[in-house]
Amino acid sequence: MLRIILGLFLLTVYTAHSQISTSNTEAYASHLARSKSVVILELFTSEGCSSCPPADQLAVTLQEIYKERLMVLEFHVDYWDRLGWKDPFSKAAYSERQRNYGEKFRLNSIYTPQAIINGIHETVGSNENKLRSFINNNLAVTEKGDLFIEQLKDNEKNTISLKWDYKNGETSSVVHFALVQKQATINVKAGENDGRRLSHHNIVRDFVTIDSKHNTTVKLHIPADLQTNEIKVMAYVQEKETGKIVATALIL
Image (cartoon, rainbow, N blue to C red; front, side, top):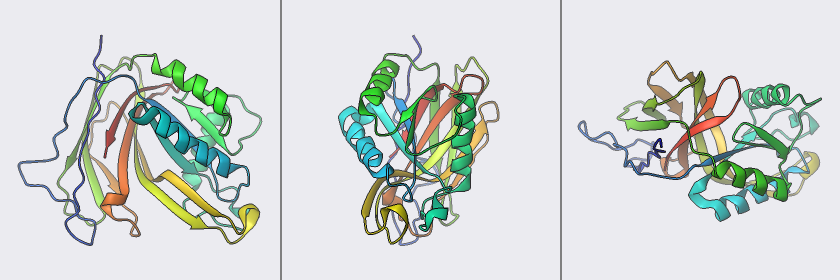
């Protein structure tokens, strides 16, 4: 049976400029441990969508229930910005990622809130019964390979550099690296959620994808409005043909 590895790292703030402290001989080597499968929940959401807040809150509830067995990522799409409120976390690239899923699932159109579980199941992001069923089913599946990630010393301001390695992969795949803001609260002043105070968790602020055969150093950029203790990094391997997520790792 293949081992499932989570690389756990501690990010240490040592200046007001979000610099990360390490020594030349110590690069946050991973603490390797045997673990059970971890499920990825990608939630496509928007502050411009009145149906999204219940899904955002459900994602938090599921994270509390499944704890380290579940990784939730909020991708804020930009196509609802036209309704009068520009979501400060929205990016066109995240809308494009959702469109790719729409083609995979042969949907007539994309929508919010939409939840994708392990790259192979999709449902309305507020459908708790389906989400629990998909999560539970995927927790019973063994990950296919070992994903190792290690944070490197980086003197570049607002940047995290990562060394990574994916072993035992049997199919063509890509590795996704997501820099995630742990939480945020926004007072919405226009659009469908005008006047509401919305809370978010695990907001994707930077996202890099690399072919799993190209083992190069990855750089993620920390937004200027964030400190290092406000972020974490999630990494996961996704098969190109099936879309299935087959290995995961986390930097705390």
